Image 1 (tube, helix red, strand yellow):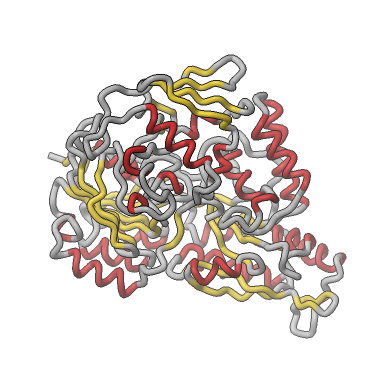
Image 2: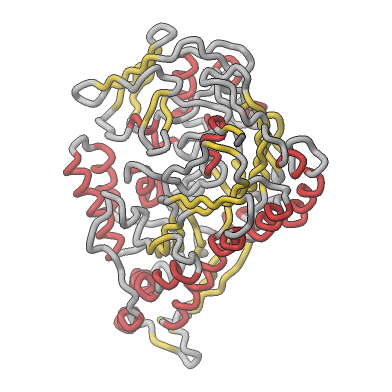
Length: 531
């Protein structure tokens, strides 16, 4: 999670998912009946948003279906114009971004889109009264103003290098969202946007249904009905895909392998910034000890997890930055070293007890590790991590629960968490590691507090010099070796299985929030039925 607005659907228990499958078969566009139609698609995803309002964080990284941003990412993650008529004009000092807006765009209720909608959206998100956990992502914005109906000017406090990437954020209609409570009003569940699809229904814990916007400025989509079935259990998604209730689904690699030779099915693998990590809360008597965190960091066999659990669909992770990123700091890889882990613990005074579990000052080296119920990948990661820790003399008890159960325990209990966003390193590291955000929802879940990291993150965020920024993020990654607040395990490739009945499918480099905003359906509005 780590600062993202997507969380596991608490109500989507297996029984509910199966019930949905049965009901969907008789519902137009809702399941097997819809899955056979050329102009409809039903896909199975694992998570749903808390809200469908971009003012509260929905779609902030793009691909929201209902909305558009000023800019959007193409297949290669290059910025392209969306509601803006072109890329922004940037001043020489990097403090002013000017966007000319696309003409003739309307919201799905027929109301014209204008500059005041952009100003309203950004100002509302920056308002501290708005419950948007990602507000600090727009910290650089000093002011945003409209110049007539067709121009928007952003003024920044400092030359925030990746600002243009932040303007993929969806734009909300002032004439609707501005007339109600931004945090609780009906717009949060029944939004209106300028996007290629219009929301037709949201049964929480079950499905989100969309219908093509016939007046979309980019052209009416060929897929007229699009449904996201919320199925948190991996096995149930695979079962429903095989039964014909779904046109596509995101699956763990081992379940996806079962469809390799099935006629009419096609597998897509997307490289990602999506990591799995274990939070090690500083408020816990065991995980709060830096020596324990350092020992766990090298006791875990990351490559074995990649080979056995991911079946090669991923790579070891040593921090939020993938090893193949230009921002990764070479030399910060941690090799599996059980003997070294034991030595760290011995020197720190954690001595093995009669049962082999270490003890220091009467405190037993034991703690719980939570993962989300039904998430097989997280479960398998947690079990592998606990097994490796046990070899070093640390007793980890794995526990499953919903986020409603887990969230109140995050201050003291470890969690098998996920996060990651393509692009600038600020996108991941600031929310994950800044000490001032400790305990702020899913931001800094480990309550990590490292002054050197705080200083480097501010430098990386505020500097306009690329070399200075690279040095700052190198500092962050080296500090995580000396004082890890998390044990990063893997970066996961996302695997999808989709019925092979459309043209135009592809994948992007994906964030953690997969399935909902990403997947081969990131551009479903561009799909066309195969002849």
